[in-house]
Amino acid sequence: MFGPRLTPGLSISKVIGGISKTLGVVNQIIPIYKEAKPMINNARNALNIIKEFSNTTTNRVMTKKEENLKQVKEQITNISNKLNNSSQNKGPTFFQ
Image (cartoon, rainbow, N blue to C red):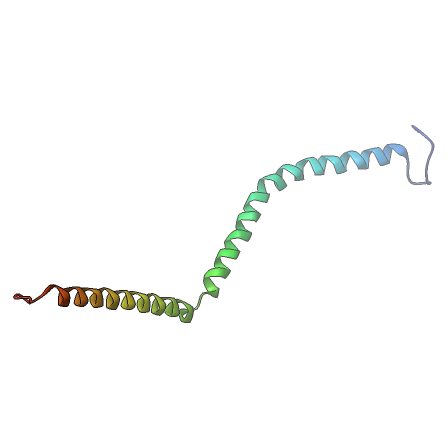
């Protein structure tokens, strides 16, 4: 044989052949992994986005809308109060 035997059924040529086969498989797997990695990351990001959309409830949305409506109503009343105060100070209005 090519070298001393490590065990009765194991020789250096068999070990080198096994390593060679293993490296061949690894050389095939690495490009597949490099191509699949971005798709896996995008799938994770998509799942995170789906979770965020599913976490939003109508109560939170309605609360934000109600807060916005309150702010708009306050602004309208402030503007109308300012207009009323300014029109009272200028004198009589003939056209209403």
